[in-house]
Length: 192
Image (tube, rainbow, N blue to C red):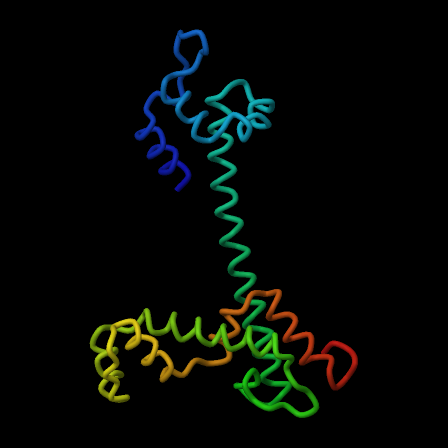
């Protein structure tokens, strides 16, 4: 994949990785790239390398590494959210623990709003994945005939059921951890 990215980059900027005999020592494509990426961004990389072509290569390598790390981070985040959701469902004895009135604790208004927004986002994500035929069947089922397509989509989304796991997936780890911290310490005073 890295070779494909470099090949595509070099195809778009064919002379970027070679130097010319001009006063700057850079090809026209390299000069264009330096301008697009900014000399300030490339300065630390230039200090580590032997020139702009190597600095641009290093920049591309860093972008690829960042992308690979984001993939790993994303998988860890999903696994963590799913594990927490499963553990809390088990602890509270309800797969819908997020929307269930739990004994001895209440969500704060700001937490309720974050959960409500996450539910809306989960419904929107679910609706976006529906086929036109499924959307038509849903519309027929709820007998929705709103004036606009936008209102129709919003109205139909309200009838979709999303699981706690789907809602948790829409919460940021920060907002989700605040909700989770509250659910795991309210009765016991210590984390589960």
